[in-house]
Length: 126
Image (cartoon, rainbow, N blue to C red; front, side):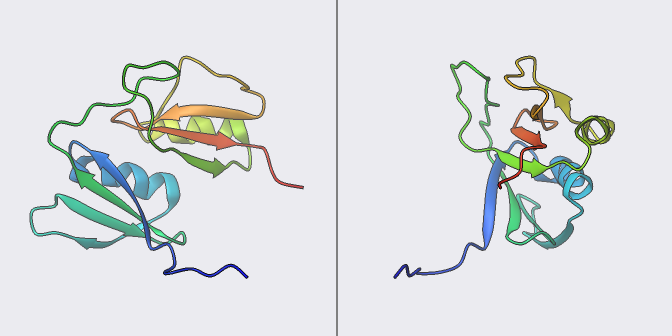
């Protein structure tokens, strides 16, 4: 029997300025702001299961992918209905495609406005 201590409440992403990054993720994932600290150094977005929390890090270094020196720490995989259309929609709100694409027919590696990786994926479990 598997037990848990507590359910997943949020996935936190470090960034240089949560105030500037929040609109991107609100548009990308259809989220709404649920909470923010008075200084806007932490902004929590909700509406897709666990919250997505953007946290200010003063010395933020974006990941370099697929090779270092700053490797990715975490990334989101998003279920694309129409891969090409969803890539175009993500670019329209501020994303860009990564230069290296290991399997562009199955998923696209994307970068958010401050360099975090996320993938738009057509791959589905059986």
